[in-house]
Amino acid sequence: MAKKSDVAQRADIAHLNSGLIDFIQASPTPYHAVRSLACELEAAGFQYLDESEPWKLEKKQGYFVIRAGSSIIAFKTGNDDLAANGFRMVGAHTDSPCLKIKPQPEINRYQYGQLGVEVYGGVLLNPWFDRDLSIAGRVDYRERSGKLSHCLINFEKAIAIIPSLAIHLDREANENRSINAQTDVIPVITQLAKDGSIDLKQVLLEHLRSTMKLKAAEKVLAYDLRLYDVQPPALIGMHEEFIAGARLDNLLSCYVGMQSLLLGNDKHASLLVCTDHEEVGSVSAIGAKGPFLESVVERIAEALVSASAESKRHILDKSIMFSVDNAHGIHPNFPGKHDDKHGPLLNSGPVIKINANQRYATSSETSAFFRQLCEVNDVPIQSFVVRNDMGCGSTIGPIVAGELGLKTLDIGVPTFAMHSIREMAGAKDTAYLATALTAFYNR
Ligand code: CO
Image (cartoon, rainbow, N blue to C red):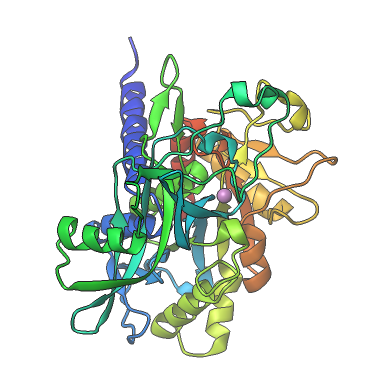
């Protein structure tokens, strides 16, 4: 018979993973992810702070700030001396590679209504074929009064598909089919009458007015819309060992980061930053290379310590950042893609990511800090170094380290199929990561 503690542990893992699955399904775009995070933070007593208003902060209270709807910083002020102890910070990103809809997307060929798409980030294009796709994102519109307004939209049901070319029409498809991102991945969304046409903005306006009951909407002016797979994430495997789903990179880290922040105690000042635009380099007003984090830390320093530039410096100096983003597990079919000694396994704990050329920000000091933390809390750890004959990915870690001089560690759960429309992670690794991050916030 299983020990009582094993049963409790399994229940905790199941709870965490079902929460993650719901979170990912409710978050087809970074806007939706931020809204999902904000809802849960608010329910836990965190207060929303407006960047354009003065801030009055209290000790032992949680707050969150949102920029442009797709980047969020949540923090707890704790009860510590902030200048002496700094923040325990966790960073992740809200965006994932995808296909975005172009501003003038309507295409009519052979009476098939199609939408032109732009590739966002390093999309693994192959898995996007033959999927049941929907559309979600942000719509900016004018109301009858002339006021500009915006809303989030999600069609939820499958309204688009990118059909493959049959193998009979391309006999070499399995040997050498390549994909032209301009011409080959244009989704079909409808079949038109002989003289028919589509007008996406009109479709959006009707959805706003009838489905979303935004009766004041008069004209759609602009949008930021993406395609996504309607198939929800799921536990996979004979014993449900794995999680398969879209956007595990990096909504898994956002969700586990938030759960850990909520589980952490009120002693230390702790912070979670989830930024947009990581997949395209992070340079933007709301990305990790922009001023968002620095400005929030500055304002917290002003409100809780003093307005001097020195107090912000002290806080940053004493802070430590865990940049959490998924790692590559060694793939059983492609073992040659990993260094023999650095092939992380799914369900064997978070991976410390190291790169001599600073594509990851981990140092010997931050690595030792994490190893010690995990040892004390019974969390297994693994490490990853890319092969010398291959290029290395990166994360927001080196960016925040470079911008703010923060002591930084790069970690993440091992996954397969990174940047596919359906990625895969270990079902136990979410719990290992949550244990490590909660312990970090509490330390
Ligand atoms: Co990522």
